Structure formats: structure tokens, C-alpha cells
Amino acid sequence: MADVLIVGAGPVGLTLACELARFGVGVRLIDRARQATQTSKALVVWSRTLELMDRMGCTEAFLAAGLRARGATLRGGGRVLGGADFSDIASPYAFGLMIPQSDTERLLAEHLRGFGVAVEREVELTGFAQTPDGVEARLSHADGREERATAGFLIGCDGAHSAVRHGLGLPFRGTAQGDDWLLADIRTDGAGAPPGDRVALYLHRDGPFVIFPIPGGRARVVATVGRADGRPKPDPTLAEVQELVTARAGPDLRVFDPVWLSRFRIHERKVSEYGRGRVFLAGDAAHIHSPAGGQGMNTGVQDAVNLAWKLALVLRGAATPRLLDSYSSERNAVGEMVLRNAGRLTAMATLTHPLAQAIRNRALHLLLSFHPVRRRMAAMMSEIAIGYPASPLSVGPGAGRRWRPEDAAGSPPGAGADPRFVLYAADTERGTALTHRFPGLVQPIPRKNPDSGRLHLVRPDGYVGLAAGAADWDGAAHYLKECAAA
Image (cartoon, rainbow, N blue to C red; front, side, top):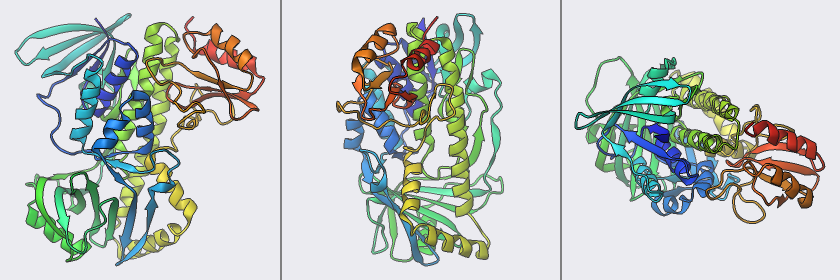
């Protein structure tokens, strides 16, 4: 019997498996596909995800494989409207790391094998039932063998058509955006080619057109190609892509050597709860939305990181099972925000009325002239602005915010196979006495708080759980008692 059975071995399922294995949790990871994805799909790993990968121990491998995008330039009406400089991101990773999803999955699978866990492929979940002590799952293997597997928890990371979500009977409410879109992974050259380390967005009168840099000298082109009519269409040809590029970016940009040409529609859907009982959802199984801003995969990976440490503490018997209730409330709020922001960006980019487009372009040109606006845009895209201020785990002024990426000792709190809170206090003697009362929940050695007037308990995922006065030891003890197993 596994502690946790994960369905779906995309980036989200792989991240969850890596984290649980790192924490010593017994995990099975199954996927019905014969092999990992071979296409680029999700392209960018943002700053906050890279910070969390520091805890996972795999950031360096990603940095070696990826391309660092330093900013984005926005054009409209024949001129540059402005842009974002990713150096404004308040993170050690002040860039967007462009890396094809095929490489992301490869690197995470290699990291997982380092813990002695491999993806079980061509294994499909065909049903499940919850019991008081766990979950009984029915699995179908490629050779026709049927298996009944038991696990303490079942996690659906199995995408937009999630079998786990369907098994829970959770509605996946939302709509489809009204345009057809084109995608092409190609090479570019010519005087009109954008710099190889910046995203280029063109707000053309016929629709938006975006060029993303990809490692290896490639680029991705994404653009609208008319209103959707529901009829299936063949994949675009290179000649169609070149015609669109010429119309929207000018004749000085040539595309060639395609490796992936496709069409898609944008769907915006989300569940209202991320789990029931011992079954949870993460990633596209819980939320899908516009690719604007490159938030989808990053949001799903952060779902996995959020859930992993909570599962580990509960399975160890160190934390109350009520801790798991915070997963849905925290990530549901984040999912709502990401869906809303991505939808607004898409709606703005796809305006069709000439007057509305002119007003939009003038407004963007004005807004992007202000550095605070550009800095806020970079913080939103990079996801460093995400926090949990309304979480039941956030207590005190400033609780729920992201703690600085590195503490004074130079290593992130929660690093290694030890998902415990970290106490930051001015009085480390009193702090040590407190940590020894809750050895399963808090790292034994408190750290000196740079804010001598405050006491902080920082969660294993690097967010402030408790923010209190420097002498509020009763408040800190009460907080940990509420989290601890009975």
C-alpha cells in the first residue's frame, strides 16, 4: 500500500511525487500515456517556481537547460507601447526561464528517479472509492491486467479531462474563449526578428501575435486566426504562419524549420473545491485558463508544493488532518486570481473594435511609462506576489506573504527532507524552548529574526504562517498547538 497514489505524470504530478519522495512518503505515480510529452507545450518557469525548486533541489538542472528571458516588449499601432523588464522581479531569479515542457518533464523525472521512484506508464485509473482509512483504486494495465490498489490518499494531476475529478463528481465550470488560435514552434531570422532574450507581443488590428524565445535558437509564435466556428480545421502550414507573421510583424521577419504546428482554443474552467475527503486535485485537473502570462504550469506546480508538505506532516502524525483543509482554500483563491487575470489579459489583447483598440493602446502606452506599473506587472507574471493572506493558516499582520527567498544563513527554510516550520525570533533561548515542545512541527534550532520586534513562524513552503510580537510566545505556542496532531 502506497501512502499516496498520484494519477498523471505531467509537470504537476512529477513535482508532487518528487516532493513527497523527498519527505520520505511512499508514493506511486501512474500515467496512462506510453511516453512523456514530446512537444514544448508550457514554455516558461517563473521566478517563484524556481525559488520553490531550490527547496526541491533541482533548480540548477533547470537553469542549465533553459533560456533566460529578460523582459517583454509590447507593440501596437505601429509603435512600441512599452514593456516589462524582468530585472524588476524581486527574486534571485529575475527572469522567465524558457524551457520546453518536454524538458521540464525529463528533468523532473530524472530528479524523481534519484529518490528511487519511477513513473508507471500505460496504467490507467478506471475507478476509485474512499474508505475510512484511505482510497481503493481500480487500475488497468497495458497488458490487460486489472489491479486493485490501496493508498492513504489519491491525487488527481491528470489534466483537463481528469478521471479523478469526474470520479469525485466535481463540476468544472467555465467557458471557451471565442477565437481560434495558431501555434508554431519554428526558427526566425531577418531584420524584424526580436531579440533572443525577450518576449515580443504585437497588438495588431487583426488580433494579437506573440513570439516567445525557446532554447536552441527556436521561437514560438502564437496568434489568433479568426473567430471559432466549432468546425475542425487542419494544422496550419508554414506558408500560413509566414503570411500571418508578415501581416502582423512586417516583411522583415522570416519563419522556417517548423517542429510543431497546431491550432487550439482557450478554455477557462475551474472547480470550486480542490478535494473531498482523501482525494485531491492539482494543476489542470482543477483549473485551466488562458496561456496569457504563462501562469498555468507554474500555478499547478505550486499547487503540488503546497499540498506535499501538508500531506507529509499529516502522514507522519505530526500535524492534524485539518491541516489539509487549508490546501483547497489557499489554492482555490490563487486559482481564481490567476484565471481572472489571464482572462482579462486575453480580453484586452483580443479587442476587435478599432476605437477600443486605439483607446487600449493609448492607455497601455501611458501606464507602461510608470516604473511602479511595470514592476507590479513583473511581480504578477513571476508569481512572487502570490500569498495566502486569507488562509486559516495565516495569523497576524503580514501573515501569508512570501518570506524572503533566503534566510540569513543562506539556505531556504524547509530545505532538505524535513518539512517543518522555521521559527524566527530575537530571543533564541525562548525560541529553543518552544521548538522542543513541538519537535515534529518545527525545526529544533530557531533562527535570528532580522526584524527584532517581530516573531515569525515560516511554513515549509516559504510563506509566513504566524506574524506576532517578539514576546508573544503564548501566541506562537497556540498556533503550533492548533496545527499539531492531537
